[in-house]
Length: 77
Image (cartoon, helix red, strand yellow):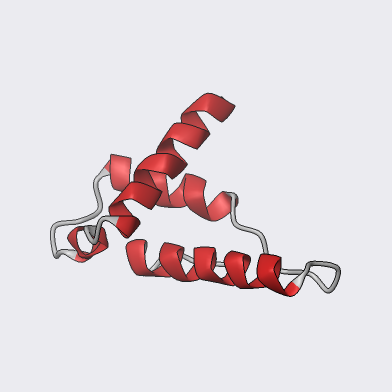
């Protein structure tokens, strides 16, 4: 199961980095694949904690921003 989650996360990250995230925000979005990608990605996000270094905290915040851009309307932590 973790292999599938990692593959889905990788796919979602590629969409975000490649500038295709807007594709997910089109009026016809909402396929089961898109929903699954956003669900799996969202479940893997972590909030920064006080014990994180500044660099780690910034990276976690950036990942949440990428998620929000690629998966509008889905809850983020």
